[in-house]
Image (cartoon, rainbow, N blue to C red):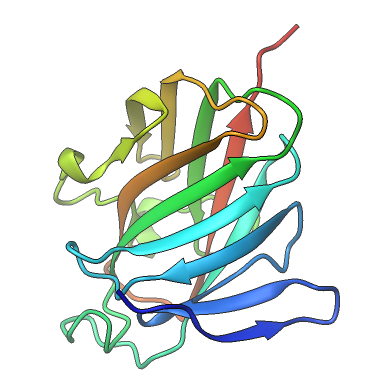
Length: 186
């Protein structure tokens, strides 16, 4: 497993970490990236470890740091096939009873069918979608690409992990993963 390479700190303390053919950044705030490892293959997915300091949605910025080549060797090129595992510590002070993810090719605009970005919409490899804290998941593809984990919880100061495949049939040099912990409503 490859360790994160070339960590860079931004002016406000945000970090950019590299793993495989991508970089991962917490530059948009509300959470901290602690590490990024892996080559980005099914047997060695990229694992981003982070700490959420809020129960509000946060956005992970993902950039290609190697040449984009749709049919290249995963890890050596940004191929549009990204096995990803998010390991997140709940430092929000609230229990999370669901956890959602949304892909965006343009920040603050949900991904749609035409941008090629999805949670493996074409293959439907449900076996790659899993969590150690939630028993079920639901995928929505249109008019956006969302993944919702439910029937479980992550208590404050506990850690939950989420695995899934991101596919991008027209590989982009940058896209976003919105992470949304959900808390009980009162």
